[in-house]
Each structure stands twice: as C-alpha cells, then as structure tokens.
Length: 280
Image 1 (cartoon, rainbow, N blue to C red):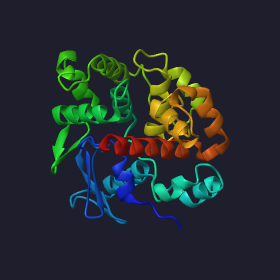
Image 2: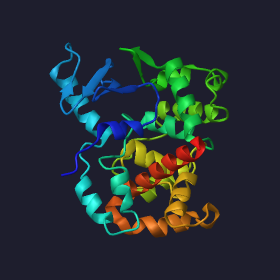
Image 3: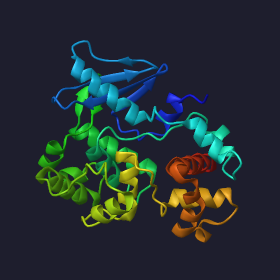
Image 4: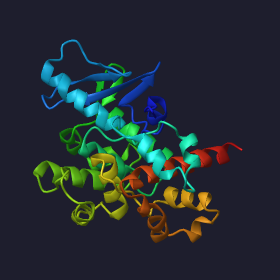
C-alpha cells in the first residue's frame, strides 16, 4: 500500500513561512474559528498545544488532512496511470500528494500572487507578505487574516514585491470581507465556479482553476499553465509551443477523477527538470 510521503509533499508546498518540516514531522501554524492561533504537528499522529480544548483539537485534526491530502488513495491513482505514458511519474514522485491551503482565503491570495511570475519569485513575495502581516507563533507565522491585509495600503503591499497584484489582492479582500465575493464554493461544479469567479477583477481562468484545486480540492487544473504545458511537451517529445491548452486537456481529461492529481505530478516533473537544467 502506497503511504503518503510527508517530506515529498512538503517539498512541493509553497514556502510561505507558515509551516516547517523537521525530523519527520510537519508543523503548520493555523488560525482556529475561535480566533486563537497555534501550531499543529503531524508525524503519523497529531500533536496539539497543551491548552487546546477538544473542539479546537478536532478543528485542527480536520484541517491538516485537508492540507496534506492524507486521504488520497494513491494505490488507485498509480493503478490508473500504470500502463500510460505517465507511468514513470510513479517512481519519480512515489508517495506525493497535492498540498492545499488551510483556508480558501489564503488560497486566493497565494494564487493571485503567482500570476505572471515564476513559482520561485511568487514564493518569495508570499513569504514577504506573511512576515509583514502574519501572526508570529513558535518561529513560524499564521497566514495574515483578511482584516489585516485590508488594513494595509496598496503601496504597503507593493513593498513585498507584489506589483500590480497588490491591487488585486486588496480589492478582492475587500469584496470578500463585505460578502460580495463568496469563496466557500464547496458544492459548486467546477465550470459554474470558474464562471462565477472570473467575474471579479484580478481573477482570470488560470487563477480560478488553480484556486479551486488549491483552495477547495476540486478535481480541476489550470490547463493553460506554462509549467503544465511544458511538462506535457517534455513527456511527449514536443516543443512547448506545440502544446496548447486544448492539447493539455485532451491528454489529461481521460483520467477522470485522477486528472487533477495527474496534472500536479506533471507540473512537479516540470519543476524538477527545470531546476536540474538550471543547475547544469
């Protein structure tokens, strides 16, 4: 039985300063619905601050499996792709699951911050934002609350190198706090949700699809993503210019309920090979 590899999964998470993996244990700083903040740890068992009550522990116990994808049936996924051109990805990333954000709001901010920049650059800006506006706890930070983000000026947000994305994040946060932007789209179909989200300034199709995958664990993927197109191109021996969004969908869609996870593995393959190329 394929077990979740915490280290591999953590390695693919956004290095935003809200979590750390050390000596086989994953630590995540989180906000609770009670307004309290603390660190929950997982090493195969859950570990909580000693002063947390039963309700707080349950909330954290529900949240961390969502973040780490602990309920992913990797055996079924590997069986699905075992006889496909993607079979080599099993050995390449055995035990890897798709990480998710602890909250839809965090997911939206982090996805918008990734628009039109490299993943490495986006990680730095997100980490800068977390250090600027997050809540320090135990050497890491809980992600900034929307109330804190909206209290910052657009110029203040730009200091963390968000550029024009600062205006999008501030504007979307204001809409979210006013109730005009609903991020709790758990029961919505993907197509309906994309249509709704793209009505808002700062959210295009790529952003909407990535948000649904990263924030709500919907079985979707941003088919127009450069890294995903480039990964498909490498696997099928094409140039990236030859691989359009429709080509990505033609290749990925047949995998049904596993298409989102497969797309993530392809994206991770592209990141790994690009990193190796840059080191040469």
